[in-house]
Length: 192
Ligand SMILES: *[C@@H]1O[C@H](CO)[C@@H](O)[C@H](O)[C@H]1NC(C)=O
Image 1 (cartoon, rainbow, N blue to C red):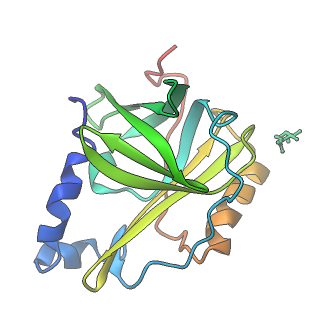
Image 2 (cartoon, protein in one colour):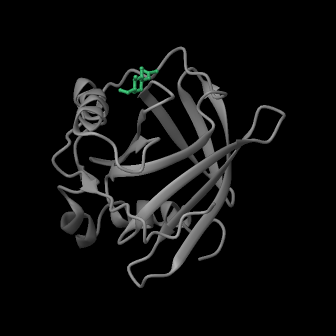
Image 3 (cartoon, rainbow, N blue to C red):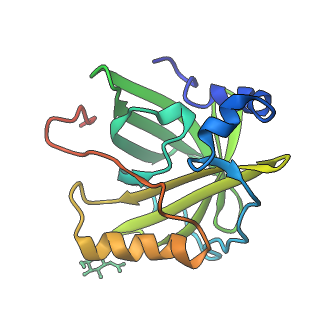
């Protein structure tokens, strides 16, 4: 998978709104309705946030369908930017990666760009050492597109930790029913 291709489908989303595909997707990450009124982590600090995160749950959005073993490595690029290096295993078993960059645009909100496609990344809650609850939502007509990522530092987090991270979504009125569990395991193609 080439750089940037994970985010490229965002450009096509507007075309779906009036089509039958939107109806097929309703109930998943695209659904009828408004975005919830969320509260971002106001004192978010990117420095202790750097390093490796394992994706444990997500909305299975267009650019991640079938991907497991999802890993994100955030590194300081200097000048206030963070390199975002995502890796995953595709449904065909291939290694996939995407490299982008991010910077904080308002408290608790990063703007992440892959190949020129910007997307917001709202940190609802994180303790930096164990979990992060990340969300984005935008509206197009009557539909909303929701993205959620439950990230942990541990490859195999405890049930208590997952419950803490999930609570941050619930507290913001985000429906967890459509969350997809991301497989992580020692057979995953993680970067060293
Ligand atoms: C992370 O989890 C560990 C184990 O439960 C706990 O001891 C530690 O205090 C947590 N870190 C933070 C910043 O809450």
